[in-house]
Amino acid sequence: MSACEESKMLVECHFKNLIFVSFLGVLFFLGLPQFSNAQTVISTTTVTISICGDSLVNAGEDCDVPGETGTYSTTIDGRQCGTDCLWGPYCGDGILQTIYGEECDDGNNTDNDFCAADCTAEQSDAGGGSSGGGGSSRSGGQDSELGDTEITVQGKAFPNSTVTILLDGSSVGTVRTNSSGEFLFNTESDPGTVSMSFYANDSQGTRSATFNTTFDVTQGAVTNVNGVLIPPTIRVNNAEVNPGDVITLSGQTVPNVTVEIAIDDESQILTTTSDSSGNWSVQFDTSSVSVAEHTVKARFKTGEGRLQTESIYGTALQLFVGVEGRATSNSDLNRDGFVNLIDFSILIFWWGTPGGSSNPPADINLNGNVGLEDFSILLFNWTG
Image 1 (tube, rainbow, N blue to C red):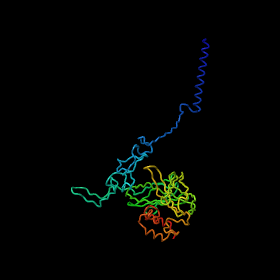
Image 2 (image 1 turned 45 degrees about the horizontal axis):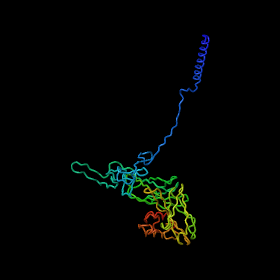
Image 3 (image 1 turned 30 degrees about the horizontal axis):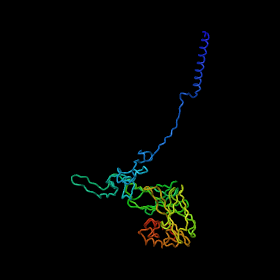
Image 4 (image 1 turned 135 degrees about the horizontal axis):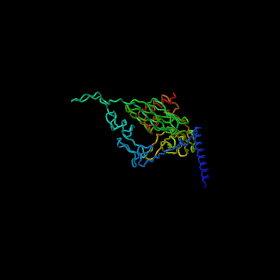
């Protein structure tokens, strides 16, 4: 290559570099985006997998101890992990569990705070005196201020329904269930033994039987009550049928549970499953019963094995197979079509006696005892 050609190429190269540098200067002058400031954003999603039984405490688990069954413990240290990887019941969990002999549960295993370490109620010293040798005087109880005395209730009823709640026979409010039929309710209370009642109307306006429970409330603590299960409602289009007719029994309960329908105090049991809205229905062939008046009632079951729970039976439905009759309210104790002083007199006669199959007329809510709850229901249905 000649010297002239080399000189020409060098000039062209410098000229091109000059144009490129000038182009970058123009971009900077115009304020266009510069590549050196560009940012890249990356979206991420975190998924946590929880497996009960892998000995790892994952999200949503209290514990994970394979082999433990969650049996009751008298102490916090001795508590057991359940098969659902949640702590089983124990003294010190803040939940009053009278089935295990607890008289109170203030959430610890400490003495001298009104609730003893073994969840038995402590008696406070009235006045206390000074001891010899310079000992200090002591009045009963503890020096710190007590918290509120409250009751918190967890339960299940019909989906998206209103549950009415009574405390010692007086209404203390209502609560709305969610789409799964679950509800949570909190109220203040006086310490001591109390009785709470719960009932609800289903989507068709049929009222449930009343669920009742009696327990002790600890002063200055929150008493947690779990397992309030409103029983299913039950309906039939016509209570008077001919022998051999196949009729439809229906009602509403908690979604996706087993429903048992008992004919005449469990002489015959029908079984079905509620749908996602809690509705259930079953066909009943009346040729399987005699020509007479019969009773039909329902309850629900959920869970399996030791974790299975079941509601009480709901209101008994009267069914007249081949005979004439008139369906009456459970509060109509003498079956005359009215709820009045005659029924009140019958209720008083049986007051405080065990209910159940030995005395079905006076035990209106079928809870096994004739008492204040039955009186409240009778007044609710009063016709005069």
